[in-house]
Image (cartoon, rainbow, N blue to C red; front, side, top):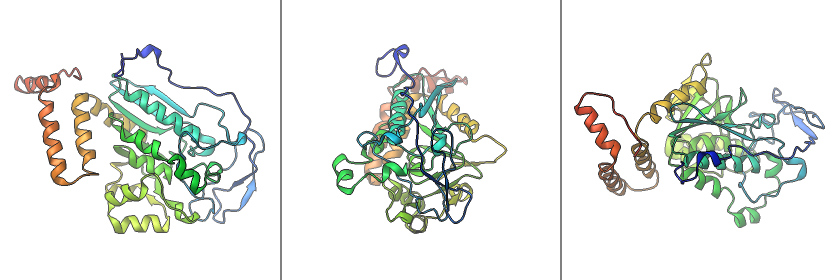
Length: 337
């Protein structure tokens, strides 16, 4: 049974779509410093991606509201965009699967991501989640520019653009660990910052290039980055739009671990997720709630909540088991209750 009381057998892990042929008119050469246009594949197949961090005029990466942004037929995705799988020992892996667009955040991708995370959060067998990208594709290039171009200020206000994404991540009780390979730009970086921990390949890059298109991060980037690295560094990163290495992000405390390139960042993230999943799920949930409260409240209010959560843990079966195991000098047998 799941946390919501729905049998696991009734869960549907992925949705499919009727195949639609993509028609692409132009692309940008990712290897060019000039951002020159190059011919794009007209039907199906692959193309060189438009995201150039240095000079590409379209290098804006912002998330799209997951439900209500209108889709042009030419922009419809043709396959499952988010792949979920359960590993052993209470760990699940969620992979962004839009490699042809460098996992750019379309409306459909955001929908599937939130749905997958919600399902796993309700699953009693899942006690930690790793969020990454399929294969060797980069974590996320940011917004789908074709969709972004259709959003007006009035429409964004009307639908509360990005609110569902923020609320979706904020309601997750299960710890989520981002495993970033390649790069996480704009909205992709914002998603990584929404996660509870962040592992990254040593050659990965992070950044907010929105300023290059005359806008700003819109899914918590200004707030979370400033809280994490301070006002001065946040100003530097966001006002210049320049990329930052994972080594620098590790030094600033954004990245938990910059994983050497000869090692697999997802494997390393699964290791820490497995360790987290080995502890009491209710206790992990209480700890996550207390820590996240520190982002939005005063010290006094945070301390009061911490004490309340601490006292409430005494009634957990796992707390009684953990104390008994310590006194009896044996490993605890947590039942996650």
